[in-house]
Image (cartoon, rainbow, N blue to C red; front, top):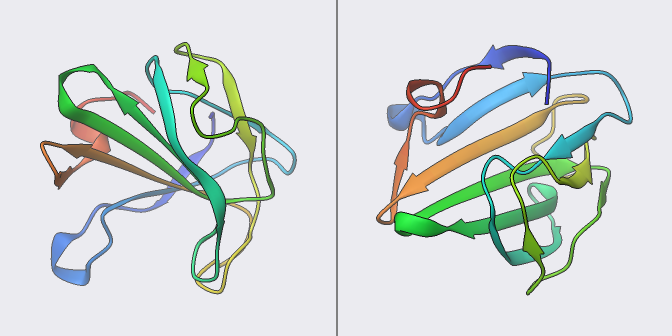
Length: 115
């Protein structure tokens, strides 16, 4: 998604991703190809979608207004997977909370992806 990073990765504060503010109803696209392993609602982070990629990488997209893919679906890099939103109790306005995990540990997305 194209937008502005409003909150960075901070392991000490348990903020395991980055927050990206973007236009309302903007499509969120898959970072890499893979299989959707989670696509559902959570009280804290609203509509969430997670994708398992090769090499033990998982990308997670939180606070969406709607989800476009279901668990088990295969996606390609750049495929629309959700619509940005402000769902969940932890949301602070329209934004995407994006996490990247490698071997079960959170990593700072800005060290691997240009935003």
